[in-house]
Structure formats: structure tokens, C-alpha cells
Image (cartoon, rainbow, N blue to C red; front, side, top):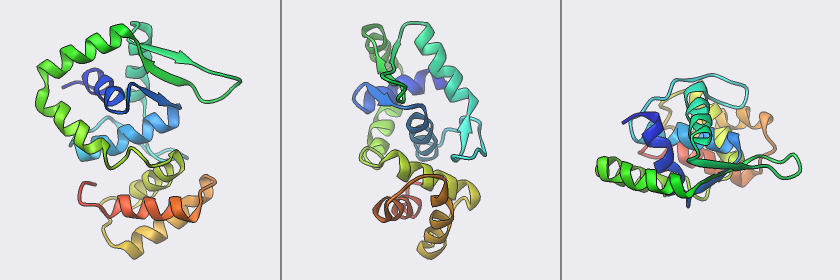
Length: 166
């Protein structure tokens, strides 16, 4: 499965749309970890960033599978088009097990805010594989300075890092 197959399934699993490039990058980062897919993430100020994810997203847009709407300088809303939904149907038929795995992995991320995912990804990239809550909490507190995050969002980041799937 290529990133151009994986990405439309991710959009579909999140209801057909994702608001913001940062949220897209962080969701893809954690879904990649859970689904054992690596998308060329490298360290970045707001946590790991993948040029491959950004390029695949742009290609899907240019091919008409995604629409992009930006209102008053806000983060762009990326949404699957009708052609994108047809593409998703084709990919699901070709990769039913991967689709099932993505759908299941999305449940752990669906309600997490962008701030939570930024903190968790930044902390994870600094100490990958951490499962100790104390170490995860400390890494998240250090990463918190890059994003305005509440105590609850920080604790959700700790929970995500300590989950079995990451």
C-alpha cells in the first residue's frame, strides 16, 4: 500500500475531511505508527513532519480527489470530492484488511485535539517508545511550550503515548 492509497482511507475514516495541515500531519504520524507504516517523518518544530504526506496530499488535490477550502486565513479544510470517494471505494476493495486496521486505529485519535497531537508527537519524537507515564508526562510538559495546550490536552497526550498501539 502506498501513501496515496493510505491517505484517502484516512480522510474517509475521519468522515471525509480534515481541517488543517498540522492536524493532518499529526494524525498521519500516529496512524502510521499504529499501522506499522513509515512516511518519512523528520524532526520539526511542531513535531515530526513528512514531506511525503504533504506531497501526497497535494497530488490528491491536483488530481481532483480532494477539495481545499480556506476561510479568512484559517487552516485549510481538506475534503474528499465525489471522485475521491470513488477512489476510496476502489482502494477499500484492494486493501480490505488495511482499511479495517485504519478504521480501528482512528478510534484512538478521533477526539484528540491538534494541540494534544502536536505535544504527543513532539514528545514521542524526542523519546520514542516511552511507556513510563512519568517520563511521558515530563516529555509532554517540555513539548507543551510550542502550542497553547490545556492540562487536559497534555494528559491526553500522555495517555496516547503510553497506549499499547504506539
